[in-house]
Amino acid sequence: MMSRGWARTKASNRRGRRELPQRSRRNTYPSLLALIIVIVFASHSHAQVTFERLVDSAKEPQNWMTYSGSYSGQRFSKLDQINTANAHSIVAKWVYQTAATGKLETSPLVVDGILYATAQDNRAFALDARTGRPIWMYQRQLPSDIRPCCGRVNRGLAILGDKVFIGTLDAHVIALDTKTGAVVWDVTAADYRTGHSFTVAPLAVKNLIVIGISGGEYGVRGFIDAYDAETGARKWRYYTCRGPVNQDTRLGRATHGRWAAACVEYGNIRSSDEPDLLANGKPCALKSRRRPSRRQSVQQFPARDKCR
Image (cartoon, rainbow, N blue to C red; front, side, top):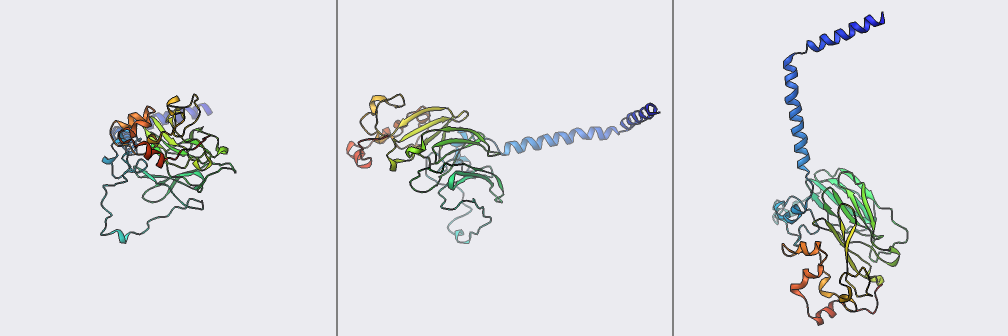
């Protein structure tokens, strides 16, 4: 009895399939094709940030993809919808609360309609730039004995590929997934207990994330690091303060016993070839054309007897 019932049901199903109009079947394929096109278009509308896009950032004035807006560091925008004639009528459209007290010193990034920024105590977050809708938030669990000199602040993120990058108050460099905020990699740059910390926004150069340490108030030995954006492996370290010769000293004996005063600045890249110099671990070359005199160097960077 049960077998005959199952057979009737199976036969009925077969008849149902045979009775499906051929036109309906044919109409299914264009619908699937349209869906695929929509998905592909949506994926390209939020394309990854490549080094080429960063170099040509002036061609995308609707985006703000790096600290200061471009490698020139001029913070100039070609957008003119807001100008001197209507600036007085600007009103708030939305407000986002960071859940942290204190001051904000961050420069947000905006990429394809998504705003990425940081807040006190190494919070990082992504918002819909049009509505303020939170997409994700990351909160760094900081030790209780960190030693920032001038507030628990952070000045922003770098973005490259599908990751954003942050330096932390406990001297870590961290990569976060742009879509979820999940930690991709986390590396320790220095010991925060000696006064080392990061407050600056990193800089993405080619396949590297470049960042400089803070902590001069505690007498730390300053340095600039470069990390592989994919893996977090440190590629080079350049010390900006004189110190003993060791395996980490980028210029070896050439930097021992003196300040590399003309080599400290790395944030503003002034010509097309300078990203190559920085990516290859030669920040000194960025200033070689405008090297100050020895007297100017001493005035701008007074020597110290000892650096850690």
